[in-house]
Image (cartoon, rainbow, N blue to C red; front, side):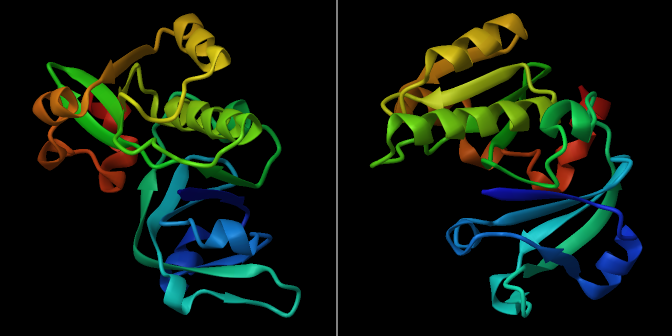
Length: 197
């Protein structure tokens, strides 16, 4: 899972410290975080990197100071801004999506959506967060492995209304058409997608 944070802090200071400010992040959410994106308030730049769990710590109020490894600042090139996607929220969680470019089309691939034990409310929340991630990345094609988490009607309708194609492929088809070794646009290249395609 990716934690997305919007801040008025100077991203250069955060980069020097390899850490974010103090954020209200639940302990259960903390255990799922793998990537961090810290957007400046104007959302024209982002500090991004890997969540450094070992060096992150909680302050006296229980807020998390997020330590970030492999971090760097990049220009934010998505077609929509923070407020368009996330409204007034300052901390938002989104699922990780692998990215590939095939035949001139950028696709988001969800390889592991077999999330057992979720109730309908949790499934709906996952897909709401997925919509935010799709908008953030400007994706027009989303690929799912067959047999995973059931796709709710509201997600299918949103995709149809917004010109996003849904592909559901067997594990064999997914591995053949979108082999993991071709995940050329990883988190490192997140905001270059609109520039390239």
